[in-house]
Image 1 (spheres, rainbow, N blue to C red):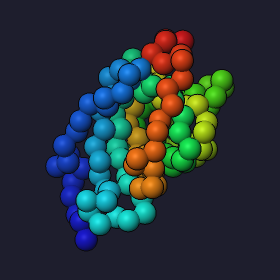
Image 2 (cartoon, one colour):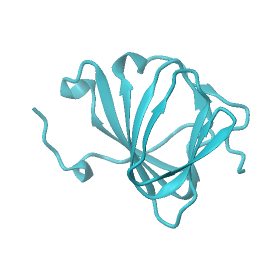
Image 3 (tube, rainbow, N blue to C red):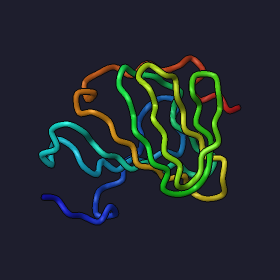
Image 4 (cartoon, helix red, strand yellow):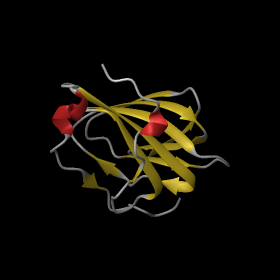
Amino acid sequence: MKVNHFEEIEQQDVDMPGAEGCKVRWLVGKPDGANNFSMRQFEVGVGGFTPQHSHDYEHEVFILAGEGTVLENEKLHSIKSGDVLYVCPNEVHQFRNTGDTPLKFLCLIPNSAMDKPIIQAPECGIQS
């Protein structure tokens, strides 16, 4: 069993073109013995965003704090603390912080996704 406070886990910059003001903590994953899923905690700074991208695996997301928008292909949804999201495979998506505090969320992905390609949408980094 692994028991940690999340702040004990190193926070890293999201190193992808089209990401601005994003950090990630890999809370649970293969190195911990989790064979099926990895749990990550993202923090998107005020005005920050993840890249617009897609991939052939799903995400399960729980918004911990803050508010923002999530892009679903060409549709924007408002999100806030307490919201639960399912991002379908191959769906273009992007998280954007539109609030005054960091947007924080948990994101679960299958470990089988680790070596799969991520497809950047051509709009990456463009503010809307």
